[in-house]
Image (tube, rainbow, N blue to C red):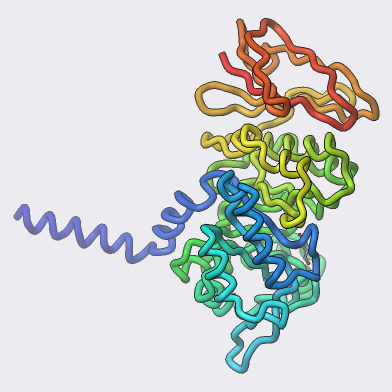
Length: 399
Ligand code: GLA
């Protein structure tokens, strides 16, 4: 009798796993994939359409040589323009810039890094290359066969399909968009290879509400960044209020880093890096890693700032106050510590004061300045720092 009951229980459990296999896989994947915001490099911001196999290998080499890999940057992501024609069976092939994608993946893996790739749910990518429309499973299988670890899936021409199939019906268009992302999510799960799924549709239809449901490990919340303070800061500071949608496995993505690309001052790049860390944003460097100057390295490799981004509680920081152009942001960290950033968005240096009560401390706090690397000792009540134009002072506070 006991044996029979045992047998029934085993059959019941097996049945559940059989009926909901993707559910089981989704759980297994979300537990391990992107437990902290993904870190790595992406080709687009610097190389754009010109990227080729040699550039990606050089980026992988530089990630190791510079210490970036050991600081947590592991994904080497090829953006748009790698795609070639489909073969007679419909299999996607890389173009002449990438002669052997499997060999490239093997090379990247041999360095202790992971390889990412890019596609679109539409027939064409944003750069006009071959997209995955109608070939979703086939493409996911190809990626798995090559050894791909990360897919950025960019809406691009699927917008045209949505408008054509459901003209004047915005709601239906949004449903189609979600289904297109879910379709690739299922295709990736079917490969049984853990592949980080990066949604790129510029934040349309408040993607943070449904990104996790369609398997997004991260989702772009905005249009494209560029290497100018005005654009970077508009995007970064507009993330206020989104913190509740981020969690381990599922991150808001305000787009890739521009640090080191040359059109911002060191203070502006420190603001960029600090703000992205406060936002628990993916840290995907977007510069030419083989040509980094010391300032760029010191910004991308500040381990204490990286640790704020990668804090394992996975709580996104948010704005505490904005007084004109002076903003204070706070991010809770493990052990009750807090990262606090004082941002000066104005055109001249200015003293900014943080009241410790406003960021959740009463009594004495221990403070450390994460950019100067100096302990500020035990402080009471408040702290005032003169913050440079477009700059930041970033603190770690603990009891
Ligand atoms: C879109 C994306 C960018 C980049 C380009 C490539 O604009 O938002 O991040 O991937 O496409 O064509």
